[in-house]
Amino acid sequence: KCLAIEEKVLGEDHITTATSYNNIGLLMKGMGELDDALVLYKKCLAIREKVLGEDHIDTATSYNNIGSLMHDMGKLDDALVLFKKCLAIQEKVLGEDIL
Figure (cartoon, rainbow, N blue to C red):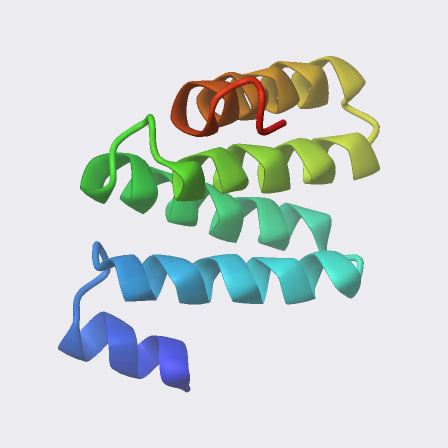
């Protein structure tokens, strides 16, 4: 219900809506609905890339979330690519010494 309100009031491309897509995706992943989770995680990522940019820590988190999901789906090569993308953004934004 919250997501429907956010989509209507804030729009589908709002960062708050992206967070709801992510949170529902996390729940779907926990329920074993991996394909549905992937759709939601990708929606979240698309918004974060558009609104925050590719080199934002929240965008990195989306890459990490999708990577984790790919791991759970047995798509290890895809997961590795996404984890590396996440790490590269984290190193760029936070610095290698922080990690």
